[in-house]
Structures are given as C-alpha cells and as structure tokens.
Amino acid sequence: MARLVFGMNQSLDGYVDHMRFAPDPALFQHFVEQAREQTGAIYGRGLYELMRYWDEDDAGWSAAEHDFARAWRAQHKWVVSRSLTEVGPNATLVGEDFEAVLRKVKAEYPGEIEVGGPVLAKSLGELGLIDAYRIYLHPVVLGDGSPYFVGPRPRLRLVAHERIGPDAIRLTYVPA
Figure (cartoon, rainbow, N blue to C red):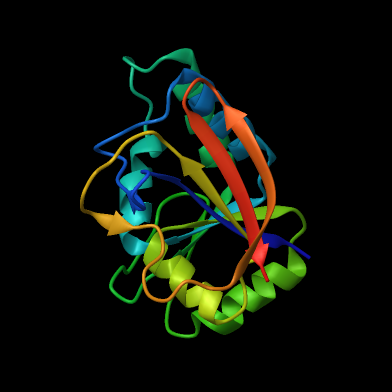
C-alpha cells in the first residue's frame, strides 16, 4: 500500500510560492533523490501545469536539473482536474470520481506517492488519504500568497525533523 505524502517548501509565515524563493543546491539535490525513490505523484491542474516544465530538456540546465527532470519523467503522475482534457507522458488524467481512483492507486501501488499542491492536499486530507505532511521550512517571510494549509488544519503529530542544507528544516507530521 502506498503512502501519500504532501510536502512543499514553506515560508516562516506559512506560504508556498516557488517563484518567490527556491531551494538551495543541497535541498534541490534532496528533491532529486526523493523524486528517484518515489513511486509517483498526484497533482492538481495548476501545479501539474507548472511541473510540465520538466518534460522537455533545456540545454541551460545544470546537471542536477537534468537529474531531476529524468527522475520526474520516470514517475507515474495522476492529475486531478475537471478542466484538462489530456495530460503529458507517463500521466493519467483523473476526473470526477477522484476519491475512488486515488483510493485504488493507494491500495495497489507500493512506496511513496507525492501529493502536490495545497488545495489538492486539503481535499485528500479531508478524505483521510494523506499519510504524512512534510514542511520544508525556509527563513523567508512572504507576507502573503498561497498558504501551505488551505482551510482548517488537521490535528498533526511531529514525527521527524531534519536540517537540509544551510537554511531549510524538514518537519514531518502525521495525522494525530
């Protein structure tokens, strides 16, 4: 049975915004290794469209970026969307009955499956499908943006913490 894990970079004041702060090289390498190990990823439309950036090679990328792109492309992706009509390579479009589909995915696949995006994580958390939350906390204050948790926060219990690189701390919580 797969473990569904929601993890994102977060500012000290609780916001996620990949355009306003990015992982340092050590944390990016951590994400490369994580992508290699994961069974797959579940995305909502918005984050999936951003992540499609990794579908095509860019000659200007670093070696680490090429490594991440290869790992990301190798993962299966499930894309929850009512507005998309098609998705890219190695991806499955999940429409109306996303709960049944994702319960089946969770039951049939081994390993860890990343959940991408706060809105999707809220929906899956309300259904009891999220097994862990990983907050990659950065020493940045944004003041506004998309919050890591949209809506009421579930009761959580801290199970691990780790410093990654010079600035980020990974906090891992499970539903209490």
